[in-house]
Length: 156
Image (cartoon, rainbow, N blue to C red; front, side, top):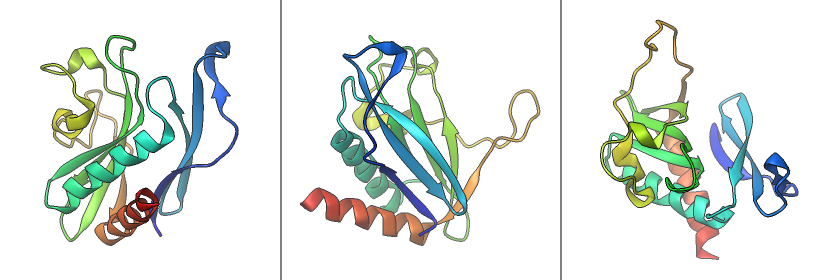
């Protein structure tokens, strides 16, 4: 599968030496690219992240032109930003994926995690400074296959 995103099962980490706020270790695979990520467990459990991912992917697969997969969430009253993988529907059944770290202050209106994809800006491929934005192309069929994995997991 050219696309998957999951928690590794490694022991939780405690960032900033705060033993009260654990973080889960995850891994995303986009073709041959792999990257670890860390997800705050301050508010969401790993199951909450996975439920969000499945909900977002269902909307994308139902025809939406974009979706986000949040991989770091702390509400706007407790944090200044979050992290997500942005998914943009392209031509020829390709999904363009970019890693973003949006600031809550940049959103118009009150942020809602349940409707997070509505806060995703239009796809850009060149930054304001003129640099190419890192982006990975994933076949839609691989996104569909990953959604099925999440559906099976949530049915347990």
